[in-house]
Image 1 (cartoon, helix red, strand yellow):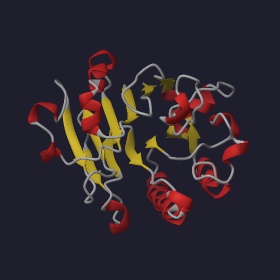
Image 2 (cartoon, helix red, strand yellow; image 1 turned 180 degrees about the horizontal axis):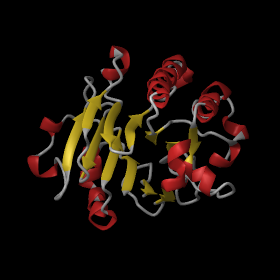
Image 3 (spheres, helix red, strand yellow; image 1 turned 180 degrees about the vertical axis):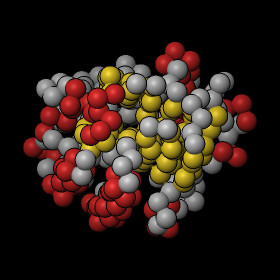
Length: 253
């Protein structure tokens, strides 16, 4: 099974760049999109999906902001939108799918915002999602969390760690939440497979950062420890354009 995540930084912008044509080659069984910034009725019908896929949309109430979507071939047993908290759910940040062997969360984690003003909101979001995952683990379920985490975990995960120690995305209080997830039965699948590899999944549009590969690894797969033996690979598709993020795929038995 192939699962792919991609923050498209605007679904309509991605369509205009023909970015989703890449799916015809990649052919994931499940595609999780973040930061779609659109409601389905704002998209021409022929662009609301791709041939062979069904779609789920969880748009933000605020126009042109946030939101998630899932394209899938593999039919889920259950779909849940949100996390039963209005302040998070109005931003369309979570879609959960149930499959026979695991629950899959497609998540767009909040950004800390200008002058780090939204960091408390972001940390509360991390905590609330972990509560949900803890409850599933307590029942013996396996979980995969994927999406844009808006946090680089360790210094290896961004090009200029020292220069960003006081910036959202690399604040100590943000990074420690990745540690907490790992202490609660999750594994960073990419880093487990490639402990020393330096690859990024996001590059600012400024200063020709992508061409110079001055980036951050913000897009993750956190996988329950019990499911890790089935993980075969995590592939960062850094060559795929169309957004300031690139897609990342998980291959799992």
